[in-house]
Image (tube, rainbow, N blue to C red; front, top):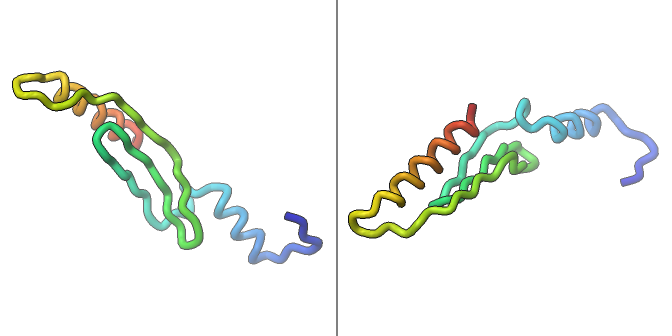
Length: 82
C-alpha cells in the first residue's frame, strides 16, 4: 500500500492490528475433535493466533486410547490459554 500522507486515525488502526492481544474485543477458542483454533476478534478483523492439531483415534467400546487422546488434546487447549 502506498500512501503519501497518514493521519492519526489510520496510525491507530495499524497499531491495533499489529497487537491483537491488547485490543481484541473477544478471544475465541474454536474446537472440534482433535483440532482447535485460538482467535482474537476485533471490530474490524479476526486474527488466528494459534492452532492445535492432535490425532485422536476413533472411539471404540472398551478402548481407552480415545479418552487419553482427548484428555491430552484438552490439556493442550488449556495450556494455550495460559
